[in-house]
Length: 281
Ligand SMILES: CC(=O)N[C@H]1[C@@H](O[C@@H]2[C@H](O)[C@H](O)[C@@H](O)[C@H](O)[C@H]2O)O[C@H](CO)[C@@H](O)[C@@H]1O
Ligand SMILES: [Zn+2]
Image (tube, rainbow, N blue to C red):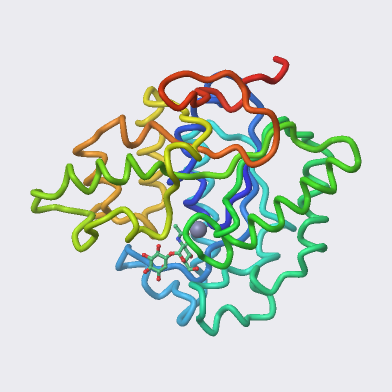
């Protein structure tokens, strides 16, 4: 089970992983907490769908998410509390954070109870969500972390909690490699970023627990990214990195184990290569 904040997060941070396990026949349940109503629109002809105009972006991103899930092979997708229950809160500090229906204003116990019911049905072995900072500090990501961890605690108390809980991450060594690789490039997605500490995310290699190599699924991830066209324009830095690093960047995703027993791993850091490592088949 993966708990994400907005449509497109599932693809950008865990898309290759989901496609990898879907291809193996694993049961994958994706829970998205908002419709992404407050997002930017990188498709000019859709500009009037914006929150400040027709306020229809949420419905459009719902459809983008359906196409992305199909590209990844994900067949079980839910919106927390049902589509439209929790509104996109906008970036931290904006007035949209005060919208009465926004996820940032959600009652934590009520939202966790919604997720608990899905956990009761699905009984996930592995739960994936964000760290306490929501990976990069967006209020909906922070709230997704809080709701997922609260629901997991309640599920465990009732005997059906996940065996392992992972938080998405990127090793600082990978970020440093990206800064170096693009330093001389005219199309530098890291322009203006001189050191890894300038990123609002990233963990030391020692804090990373798992490296999922799903390079065989990088095309599926690219197709899912293309489905999220309102959020990921063709000029996105994601595509320029993919063009330079290829499947190595698009098909490898990293995680930190927050709860559960670390399974067998390999390499200099003993990273797991499988999120189900150490669990009964
Ligand atoms: C990846 C992610 O969480 N995207 C969110 C985020 O989008 C950012 C937002 O539009 C910001 O204004 C841009 O400068 C930034 O580049 C975007 O990543 O926040 C949106 C509003 O809450 C959300 O809809 C989007 O999914
Ligand atoms: Zn997001």
